[in-house]
Structure formats: structure tokens, C-alpha cells
Length: 320
Ligand code: PBG
Image (tube, helix red, strand yellow):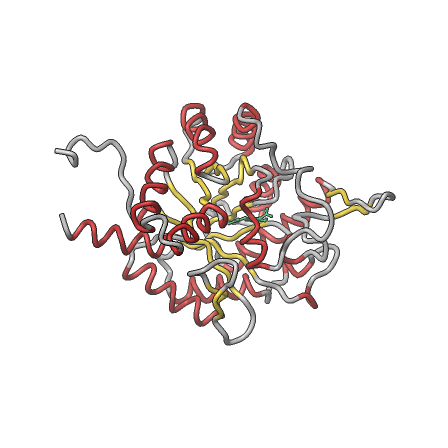
């Protein structure tokens, strides 16, 4: 009876797994993100076989881990055709053509400043990210991902006008089939800390409040959504997820585009830490968190819990 009247479903088909890829032959666990790894290209491909063939996860989102020596003030390594992300995309599309490969587009892993864009140093010692110069750099990065075979480009930088610029550049170069998942409302959140540890990408000075949204604002998220829709986004994203379920629900009401939610590193770690201390049942609490994001209106969820959730969900299905 509960099954017959259930309003919301959660399955592996709704999940996107964010993954970190690094130079070299080693796969290394990430101290700040238990359960996640920095993968070599070969390790990434074999793990993706398991995710796609065995667990039914349709899509992964790639982040490059870049050594300090490759970081520059303008982050040019971001569009190196032989860069780590570009090579990982090619390997994945060659080995597992059905797997959707999404890539993060922003300069922070490549920038000596740890900022998402091109930085201007202010006389007082602070920094300012330059919107239009950054959009030009993001276009080069996105084109290099599309050229390598990426299916979905996911700009996480929060510059104004970048969706329109990316769409125009992709179309002009013959990549009209490449989709854009826009980080539409990305809040300046305290929950990104463990991710920045995983990538070594924390801002060296200042913060990201000049371009990420104020957690106090919900109407602004709808304004951003309408702009992204006009600019040609294919999917809108809300990030973080569980602290912003009202924003997901409002966006679900206010647009007909597919909606994604990013269950970020801090949300994942809160569950992991509570489970490790014996305070919560990890499986039940994690699946409830993910279901709440679906119930609020998200079609798809980016989560570090994707592989485990997919396993739990298949056990649940077979025990019915
Ligand atoms: C940066 C980026 C961040 C995340 C995804 N892309 C962090 C930030 O804005 O500093 C956060 C992901 C997470 O916390 O899981 N472009």
C-alpha cells in the first residue's frame, strides 16, 4: 500500500557522481572526504565501469586536481588540450561511450589565487574577480572539454552572462549537442570546505561572496534561473541542496527546465561524521536526505554518496 501511494521515487538513474582525477598512476583516498578518491585516469575508467555497468549510475562530474607548479594567476592550464580533465574525458568516452561525462568549468583548481576567475589585485591587498575576462577564459575551458568529448558542461563560477557566451561558442564550433548544466543558484556556503581540501583549491585571500549568492536570498535564485533559461541553459542547478530545499521547490514551480541539486561535500560529511560516531544510521539518513531533495523537486542529484546509495537502493529493491 505504501508503494502504491508513494509520490516520489529515488533511484540510481537520478544520481550523478562527482569525481576527482589527478596526474600519475596512483589512486589515493581523500582525507577530507572519506569514501572518495583522487583517481588516476586508469583508476577512474575502471571505477566508472563499476558505476555504470554494475550500479546503473548514468553520469559522472569531473574535477581536475592540479599540482601547485601548474597553477598560474590566469589559470591557463584549465584549457590545456592535454590537461588532466581533457585526457580523462577522452579515456572515459573511448572506454564507456554510454556514460555521460560532465565537467566542471571554473578556474579555481588552476588559479594561484584559488578564485573561480581572473583576478584583479586591489590596492588594499584584497582581490576582485573580473567578470568579462573570466567569461572569456571559461569559454576556452569549455571548448577544450567539448573537443575532448564531454557531454555536459557545468559552469560553477557564477559569472554573469557565461551561459549565453558558452552556448554561443559551443554552437559556433559545432558542439550544439553539448548540454549546459548551469550552477544557477550557488550560495556562498560554509559547506564547501571539505571539497576545497580535496582539490587544494581554497581561496588564498578573501572569499567568494563577490559572486556566490547570499544564503539569505531566495527570490534572487529565481531571477538567476530566468536569466539562465533565457541564455540557453539545459539544466538548472541549486547548490547546496538540503539547506536550500525551499529554493529547489520554488525553482520547480517557476520553470519547466530540468533541475539538479548538488548535495555538497559538507552535507555528505555531516552524515558521515554522525554515522562514524554511531549517532545516525548512515544508510537510512543518507537515503532520506536524498529523497527529500527529490521530493523538493530536483530531477537529479550530484552526490558523493552516489555509489553507496545506488548499492543500498538495489538491495532495497531486491528485498521487496
Ligand atoms: C568551485 C566549486 C566548488 C564546489 C564545486 N565547484 C567550491 C567552491 O565554490 O569553492 C563545491 C563542491 C562541494 O563542496 O562538494 N568552482
